[in-house]
Image 1: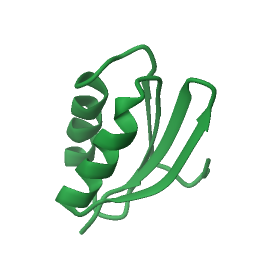
Image 2: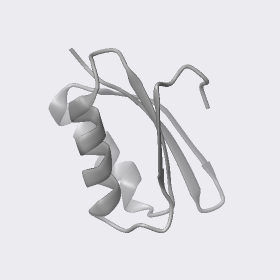
Image 3: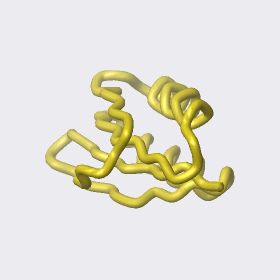
Image 4: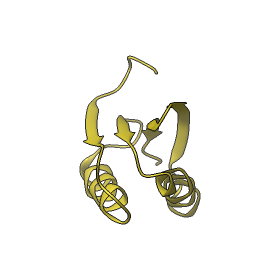
Length: 78
C-alpha cells in the first residue's frame, strides 16, 4: 500500500455498516486530495467502499487483500 496517506483507520473485526460509517466520518473532515488508508476484515467493505467513492466523487486508489485482511486507500474528491 502507498505511503503517501494522511490518515489511518483500523476497522479490523468490525462488521457492516461500522467500517463504512467510520470512513465516512473521517472523509468528511479531510480536505480534497487527502488520503486515508483503511484496514478491514469484513468482505462487504470492498463493495461498500467502491459504492461510497463512486456516489460521492472520491477515488478508491488502492485495494489489496492478504487472507482476510483487506486494505484500501481512498482519496477525497474535490
